[in-house]
Amino acid sequence: MLKTKISLLLLFIFFPLFINPSNLIWKQGIKAEIIGSPAVYEEKIITGVKNGDILCFNSDSKLLWSFNSGSAIFSSPVIDKKGNIFITLQDGKLIKLNMKGEKLIEINTGSNLRSTPLLIDNRIIVVSEKGRIFAFDKNKGKKVWEKKFDNECFSSPVYSEGLILIPMKNKLLLAVTPDGEKKWEFKTKGVIFSSPAIASDGSVYLTSMDHNLYKIGKNGKLIWKFKTGRWIISSPVIDVNGNVYFGSYDRFFYSITENGKLRWKKEGKGSFNATPVIDSKGNIYAGNSSGNIFCFSYTGEILWKYKAGDFVRRPLVIMPDKKILISCSLDKNIYVLKTKGTLSKKAQWPKYLGNSSNSGRR
Image (tube, rainbow, N blue to C red; front, side):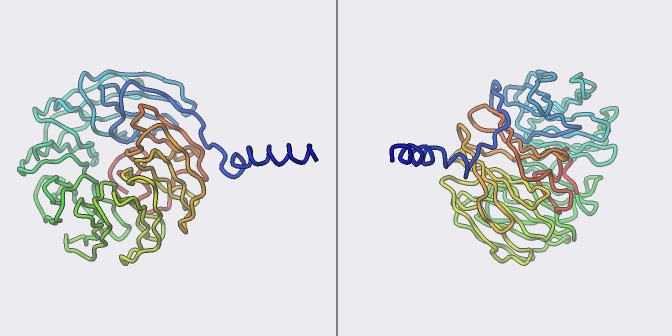
């Protein structure tokens, strides 16, 4: 009888471990918060830190190198096919590093920078806080052109169908050509702090602090909008079937069809501000202000969740060839967790800025 009671007690204590095992592989403390989204190149994790550090880890947590830029970093690194790293600094500089952490180019734009640079062939596009848009030769650093649109920009541009799509803070999505010619603009009713996602047919999904997710045609015209209960800061992502995922300040995480209909929504104990990511099995990973990292199935079931030390509000990342999720928390830790699959190669827009190199294009 006593043995039975002990066995039942042990089962009661340890049963939660079996139904919700820890998915943590490792975590690494750093000196300050990561504001942007880490990039991945050949199983190396590269990230910028608010205190100005640029760090490179391998997938087993070893720090391979660090570089201090001398300025705060609010953007994400972008990596080209040769392994060159481009990152903007708050003090107005754009720098280029190689994969050894050696600085190759430094350009001073003279205008504060928060948005992630955009690579288009041999050009790199940079948008400043005050709406100045620059194009530089990515190999030599020479300025090709500059335009000014008198509108603040803290979000990151993307590229699709021959157009650069720039989310402006003052409720505007601006479309310009690679030569800086304005083609169209789309007006929302709220500030835009997110970046667009591009569907396979070229249509654009955009969230706004006016509570709406917008679907916009290639011509800049509204197709439909879907309203949530509160602000939206999370950028949308798109799965292989055209379903769109994002979170809201209303504490719900949403799945919307390509026709603008609600598939499902799940409530958390905090606002879902972090841009989610989709794995090769169709699972979706999201984080919220309660500090939880969620794994949702394609149908909206919560497969597991992990509690970080503080808010999870930055875009999540999955490595392309490893079942590894990378998440950053306000507690100044990088969390690396086990996933069901690798980064989806078939999803139309599986993560923030489109892919693991943060290139801003499909």
